[in-house]
Image (cartoon, rainbow, N blue to C red):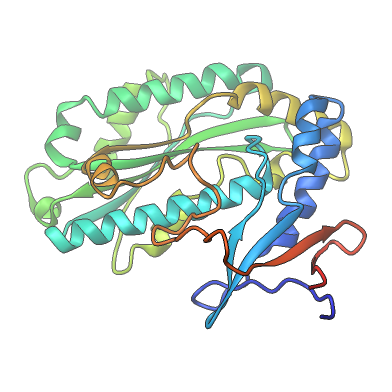
Length: 309
């Protein structure tokens, strides 16, 4: 059969950009050559050959090797799909039992310099833990999903660690005595952050379909544009070195309260360290004798091309 370019689409018809992520993975591997050669090698072997099972609805991803390097664009993309699927499954299960309402909360702090990033992330996470212990929080919130994101200001070479949170509340919350205003959230966060300034806090009710909000909090911990800077390879190497060290063994995703309860009830895989092949919650493993189609990565073409049968 004639070799052809991989075309993998989601149930909604959206293209899954395997090639884009693999191309960025190769750039990151080049940066790691000067940082951690062992990780550079792992990155280069990540998702070089993809297996798909043919179905009536098109191709269904069946397997590959994932390197699991924290910054890997391919693995980060798979994790984001996994988190989004788990969040939607949890919220659907909560709705089936008893509908709730949701809030999208963004908690920030001042930018920091590279040598302050490690301590800043630690302080950010400790501040969030303090927030969840406050009386106002406990009276209002039934559970949370929390994700840390780090952005890089390239012009100033500073970093901005911040937190995206989805909060679960009772539908009556917005008209109850337990309602927390934006100004109050800001004051509580300033208190927990132990800051001598007023941090920016964004809070908004999630209206209608929560899918957009889920996509927001299911972002990568760090976007590739913040550490792969093709026009400045020295900064790329320095940034990769810093982030590799600072992000090592940190958990950037967490569930609490009812979200944690339903995650366990649904027997969902670990959102960060779990399976990156079967990211959909209804995924089924490939059977040993099942026919699969393979696509191999060709760097020169920057495409996945189908192997000959």
